[in-house]
Image (tube, rainbow, N blue to C red; front, side, top):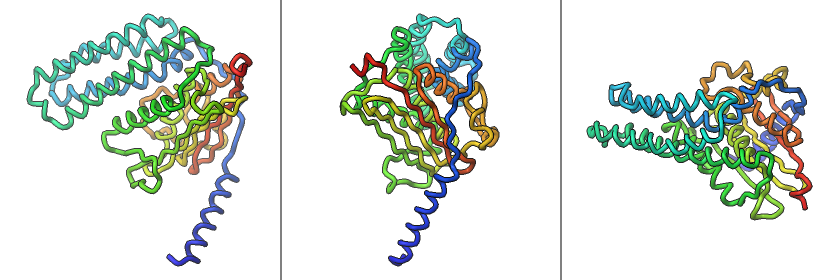
Length: 329
């Protein structure tokens, strides 16, 4: 391409970027949420319920490979019982502790599965599924620890090491990629992006540089928003996320160039179980309340919540919550 051609291409790209900003409809969401206690419990357990969905799929898949639906029946039943309990408001923190402890029982049953079926020890799909179960159980244990900590200090702002927090989100991306079973990959270098890659741009910045204060539940919120962005963005797309502490407020932003939301539905998608009409064809394992949870938690911490979106262009979710006085001091 000639220099003139490159210049024209850059100018055209810049004009498209300006046009995109112009047509993206940004709305501050202020609508009230009418939620039952069971609905609040369901989205507070959202991060664990999503992991349980993945776990039961992998257990079912091992049953299919064994041509025996009953071989992991006890573990499948246990996961369904956990999910049923956590969907309702009567669950107790000691049940989360029990869930964490029983992860070992599932690992043992998977090991027994291979002891009974040594012919599958070298089966690539069985090995992949088994490895994924190990990863899922590790994530489940981490999520359980987070919820236990949250239950003990629900409204506290806790210090998070910036490097460790970045590593946790990298683990989330890795788990999502692994669960895709090769359908897509993540890359963090746009120059290395292939047709089966999502380009991820994720940053955390703090006035303190090494420590950032935030309510622990906002790790869940950020994970859910990133998972939603991936879900509704075509492979080959872009997902950007960031957490910023400016000394007065904590800001969380997730942006994608996916399907977007029809303009007349932007305010509605925060309601429990609501999905935009242009994504109803998209199979999803979630409960349809990731945005509900993000909005609910934002308001719980006296924050503000914006959605900028246009159908076919993408979506940007922005959350800003003020630091409480005791953290600023």
